[in-house]
Length: 127
Length: 374
Image (cartoon, chains in turn blue, green):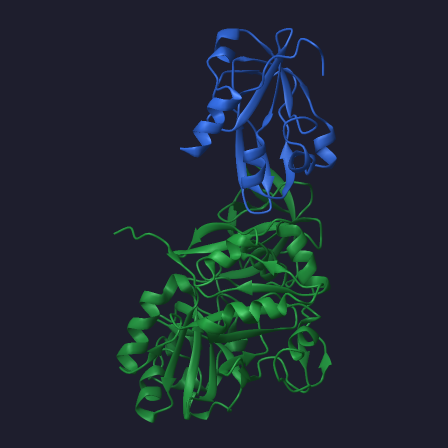
């Protein structure tokens, strides 16, 4: 993780985002991984897809249920975490680092600023 | 009217033991504990696991001829001829032979009287109890005073025999009354995981002591409804609200083995004509097991298609199978579909090839006549 890595921000749908040189890295929060339980499969998005904030990007399957992951901001999918193909449980072990899901080239950094900070997300979870 | 979920008596105990509690069928229930559904599932297959299923209905109906006559309208067994200390998987049937509920009926002697002891689904309490009370006005619901636990897995007998007096020769679906902590405890060798195991009904005040005693065995662990579901699915067992409902008969659900065939000739039995006709004729649908050919998950409600894009059925239960490391499912398809042809499941608007697999997915491991076989 580089020196220009920004503060981690969170969405109401329990994704986290961090930004480095206009590249956003996205995953699901530790809270999301805990409530999903054992994750057994992830359908990764396609590299090259142009997406809008709130679009359904990919699906995480736990033993019990499928859960959609949404794009937190507009942009282009430029990389996916292929390690998750073989071992989606990495998300259970380290949701907010090794368990990152995809990277995007973002077009509007204002959208990032509007997301919740770690403290705000914590408060949001307590509501 | 939306009612708040009810707490089971040991809810705090479960929470203190790391349970994730979620509402299920009107109750706050442990779904899984800290190590997760997959670990609990495997522990049951390899050792044993303890489930608190105190949300389920439990009722005692006095063994009186007039009560049993009335109940025989709904339950396809000869209730007056049930052997003492045996349990039976059966149903409450509606007028069309559809399943109002599936349940376990046992003939037991407790509190100095002979009773039918019936265990039924939490989600069907209202419907079932209306029938029970109409047949036997003094039927005693005991789920508010008795907890119900299941210990399941190949170690179950060895874990339990150190705590409760149970005979070596107890077979699957035998039931007896034993003593624990100066209380009467109903012990049946049964369960819903495909493994050997026991269900234990005892007064609430002794329940935490029993579960604590059971957990002293270091190879057993608390398990939640999550692993209970993946275990029963691997064992090919039907679940009410999924494989079973009021519009499906036991025969359509592939459970005709559980019907007393002589009762189907009895006009007093609900749906008897429909059921005996179904036994003689070809059914329009058949129950099948399915297994995923890739990593995608099969889920309840997904549609099934043939090679030519014709819809041929749908999935009624699906999950990840820890034993097979793939997704498995149970569903219904049209009987005329030739099972040698490829079958596809619609998963998020894409058609994925799935394979038909005989039920059960995992061999049952019940104790019968002193030996264990399917």
